[in-house]
Image: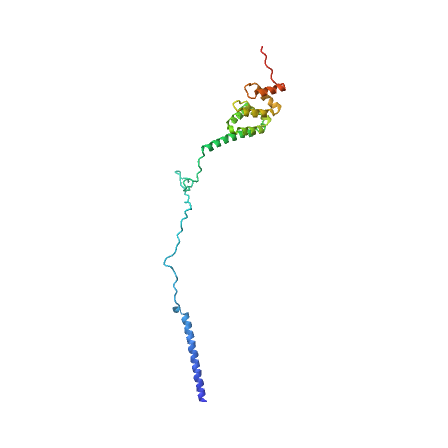
Length: 229
């Protein structure tokens, strides 16, 4: 009986010792894991040379535009650095001539527009107006006269037909121009075309004299010849 008791006590003590030994081993491992000294330091992976990219210059990029100052201290136009590529090229001699011709055409067309309606003051066309209208027409380039003349014939009313008479009586103009105006006058009202025909009949050298004389004969309005005393 005593042997069994002692044997049980020994077994119990051994068991308790084993348990304590195992417990100490576990706690020691945990402390080793938690201890900062057991943690191996891992240095940051840094390269000895920092890769910094230097921006490359785009060969297509234009140099910056700069502002310069004039002697008076004012800012001048920005320069492009392209050797004046942005400056407009001077007009050629042909372009200058075309612009001048266009200005003359525009001036006559503006005068035509002015006489599209009868004068508001009721005074009508004066001899000065007639001379000025014919003078402006002579300034129009020959290759543009047809279009300007037809525009005037279509827009000038009967009340201002004397303006056209100023062109018709100018024998320095081409015969085709005179005949165009003459045919237009014949289609006007009788009251406005009779004075013009009478004026042409007085000038035997006018290209339209023969036609005028025939018309006046037919209508019985041809002036009688003066008899010698």
